[in-house]
Length: 440
Ligand SMILES: Cc1ncc(COP(=O)(O)O)c(C=O)c1O
Image (tube, rainbow, N blue to C red; front, side, top):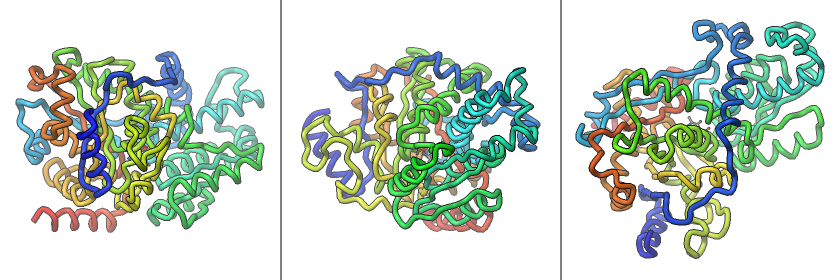
């Protein structure tokens, strides 16, 4: 990116105007390398636990314990977004309907709890004969009950960790930030999870939870800002998506680009998914992360150090740009990105774009009206991606640099809808009414 373009981008960010930053520039490198075998281990861990999960969670019986979502073609939504078919076809990865946790957080959060449970079970000789169903026995649950799993969360990660940890018999504590929705806290308390409310933002809730957990050797703290296990759990989504694309006859190669638009908070969920897809498709997949205009922490992290712009030193927060981190997209209300996720994707990330809250509500409403799908505001952030890419100067520049312009008619655009299954009806009705008002 040229210096004037970068300066304009930072101005847009400071004024909370929607913007797109495109990646894959010369010299962008990751220092962490996570290989495909590590992602495969996460896939296998989910498989080992599947029979146990099917037993513990009745909603998983139909899938044999697999926590997965559909890949849906959404032509009506494509029309509503006014995306011409010559620029590709719009699909949706329906993580808003993921069972157990109701959001993409089911992937990483569940994986980390399972990894911890496996480690404790092995230490206590509970898996001597390799039968994971043993972990539902009274003896195993008594062992798990002497350990605790804790996490700091804006809501959805807490739901996933709390539900899975308490389901296995662990004590579970979730440190919630001020922006966490009340219904998410109630849902956790109903499952016996201890909810600690913090007056501060997400970063403060995480720091407080981490400090408390550090004092207890029987407490495992799921650290959303640094956890490799979480990241691998999200990355494990890729092999299944690869199979879904093949089932639908969708090619991904040099002349059939795949664009994926994923809502981003701290960056673990989209970072993990992008990593898994990168391992599967190499340069032919282009992942773009979506953030609220007031919480563009991942874009800020990508920009830091790229040019010596004042106020953007190493690992900055959105507050340093004069933004307030206030958004209705509670899952994305994060002031500072995960350095791990940022480092992992830096070498291949397609880009990051920002979205106004009003656009989230419009898209939430359009998705209900056109496709009958119910999502939460955070999960709507990806729908602005195709237009941001196709209509902005930075997006066009990216398509040109990547030599994609001649192939756009063959492109597949997947918007990842990341949450919504458990939003209470009254709350969803309010979201819908707000979207409808804005559309009228
Ligand atoms: C619905 C939803 N989408 C996306 C995300 C972003 O995930 P991450 O914070 O790992 O970037 C979250 C985070 O909680 C979420 O709740």
